[in-house]
Each structure stands twice: as structure tokens, then as C-alpha cells.
Length: 321
Image (cartoon, rainbow, N blue to C red; front, side, top):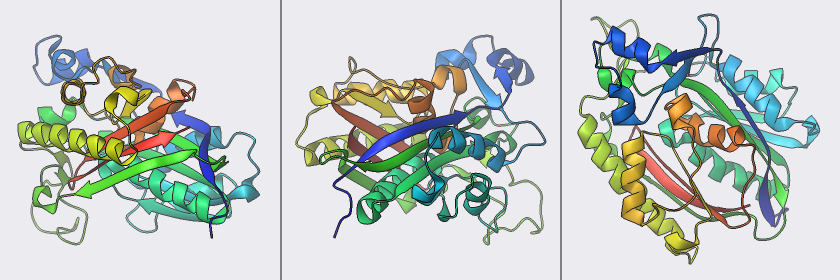
């Protein structure tokens, strides 16, 4: 038995660290020509956390902004999508929930760049099942996991947090279609080698603490194919075509990937929400960051959310607000 007929996005929040890093700083450090990063990635700047900040310091203000004046007792679950928790153990979500005055369930979700999409699907299902509100936060502190010698990751990744408060809505609101996929054959395409049980921090040898993407071209091609295919599948499930999409909110991977996906779907003229140029790629945080940064003002028509990330994991969702 479902206690809510629909789900709506009722609150939005975001947080960006104070330090803003322009392309010129990275281009000088990596001996790249001026304008190289923007021409290839569409990024002008990104934000890096202070040395005193941890992931929770980004997630908490974003969550607080999304909660607004919501009664904490109405929130039944907090989902934190992140690849960079404060600690491997314990999870960070209970700490964030406690600092926000929430006594609800709280769990981390590691879905890389598609983590918010997965958390949104799970959160919406929880709202429908329980009738309780769900706070979905996506946050990453990737500046400490960038390989300083690897151009592919250094120019792209950033620190940020975004949050969405889900509440019961009217019939027809919420996910109209969800497509979630994975392919472990590309498991090593993007990774942080050290820190898990496969290669602990204390294992012999040097390196392995930074994020690596050894074949950026292969990741590019796979991301385009996967994002386009899952978007088509989700639209078909909702009995829609690309022309019916009122707003596209894709994960902000890089501008070339997004342009290519739009070409594949015939959505070059579709209104698109993003903050790639100003804020770079903060992995799972990019979609909720874009929603909040633009004021949470959404059209009446269907939204298409798309993402692709390490693992590899990807998916698409058609959302009716």
C-alpha cells in the first residue's frame, strides 16, 4: 500500500566552497595554452574546499537550505550520494542528519557521478511507500582526489554540494520512468585505486590515492552512448519523445559530452539546466546544484535527468514536477 500518490521536489539547496579556481591557475601549473581548458571542456572555473573542510561541511549547508522551514519530524530518510565521505567508517550521512536536527534514517550512497539519480529514485520510492519526506543530498570533495599530474582529471573535477527535499505530491507527480544501468566491464575506467579492501592505504608501494582516468576518449564515447541510450529508454517508458521534454538536466560531465548527447537525441534546442562553466564537474552534486542554483523554478512539463559515472553506472529519469 502506498501512502503517497505522487512525489514533488519541495526544496532545493546548494553549497559552494569559498575558493574559486580559474582556468588560468591550472593552465599555468600544467603548462597548458591559455584557453585550452574552456575550449575542450566548457569549464571556466571551479570551487575547491578549504583545508579545514570535510565532505560533511559541504553537505550540511546544502541540506539546511533545502529543508528551509520543514518540520524535522516530517523527514523519514536522508540519502547522501558521495564518493568522498568524511571517513570510510562510519558513514557520513548520520553525522549530516544529526547536525541538521534530523532523527531519521540516514545512509551514504556511492554511485559516482550517477549517485544523485540513484538516490532520487530510491528517495521517491520511500516517499510513496511511507508518506514521509526524504532529504537527498549529493556532495563531493574531489579536489583532494585529483591526480595533480593527470590533465584529464585535473581540469574537470571540483567540490560542491546540492540537495533536494522530496515530499508527497499529487497524483502524477514524480518519476514517470526510471532507467538505471551498470557495466562492470569498464570498472577501472575512472577510479581511486587505494583506500578500499583491494588496495588499502597501508599496502606497500606509492601512489594510488588520486583519481585516474587513463583513457579519456574511451570514457567519452561510452558516456555519450550510455546517456543517449538510457534517455531514449526512459522517454519510451513514459510514452514520450525528445520533443516532449520541457527541460533537460544532465550531469555536468563536460561540454563536449553534453553536446554530443544532445545531437544523438535531437535535443539541441531543448532548454538545458547546468552550471558546468562556473562550477565544473562535482560528480553526483552537479544535477541538484543546477536545480538549486537556478532557483528551483521548474516547468510544468516533463524533465529529463541523465547521468553517467565510474563503475561504470548510468541512467536516466523522466520526472514530472
